[in-house]
Image (cartoon, rainbow, N blue to C red; front, side, top):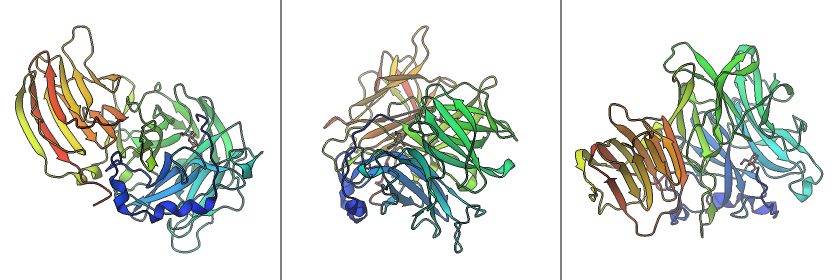
Length: 473
Ligand code: FRU
């Protein structure tokens, strides 16, 4: 955690966001198909869970200011992980601390005993960050739970909190998963530095630490989940991720997690942090969302946005390696309007087939043969996305926002998918081989360009779908 100044204001204003009108969501830098809070600050997505047709997104929230502070869990619900409706805040700071990040599960067997009626308990795990507010002065960082017995409408903090006492320093960000073979709950918890702990529990209330691991190149916000390997029928692996999306693939031997592959990065962009996957998704899906950390929103009543949800596929990739492929969830496609399409277009330096096209929200799907071009790509509202090829002794790369990542040609072609929103751009290469998420502030008056330099390229196909706002639909 970068230490952020903590502002403490009265809790009475906490329901503020719920009363905002939808017209509010049309500001100049307001993302039109990425979640942002109506007003105030957000950082990490928390408690991502599905129950009875509803997806829940809780989020680190400062209801009182557009700066980090007063950490509270905001709450939004959706029926498709794309259109979100923000409701009342659910976890407010208390004597144990302000409400730092965590997760949620549906307790299908009522192991916690929190069930009172028909609905299975939804249990939230969060860090009470002691010492970050005047009321919690002198308290340590501990792990706590809250539960809903009415399907996610209301939540109650557990009277026996904390359920995990302080282990070390500012330990935080509990993520809980069911481990079916041992019929136990497993919590992964950030301890400090690059070290994380694994804890286990029969009932979500009593927890025992049983393993510690260190993971290079990541810190904070762990996640842990099992995924089938798409191209190895019958094989599944466990994946451990840290806040920046860096991940280890391995196996659970009895109870212990044994990493088998070196740390890999799930994305190569600049604004993707505090990742978390949804719990209890139907259809065995694994979907991750992140805080698009670091974006600037001058003059806006809100600050920060979430990524669109990314669908994961785990594939055996090269010798003894497994790799996550990430693409926008298919539900995003429901926002697409009628596309402008091109196919088999020869593109020469100086030409721009997109001249005169206006609009600030696009889903762009392109397949390009760079031909003899040195660079081929887009300039979208001032942001360049360049595919660089044909340079002796260098890998082909995708470059944007000061970052560069290798992206190979397949049969002479590269596939690009670009989600362009009012203040973010997410680029996916070759069906999920590469993901590059960024925040940006568009240049005033800058339009859309498709361009090439150094030679002629072929646009095998290009579809530009204008996107509908999630706040209006
Ligand atoms: C990650 C993080 C978490 C912490 C939260 C506080 O961005 O620092 O480790 O729980 O943010 O807002």
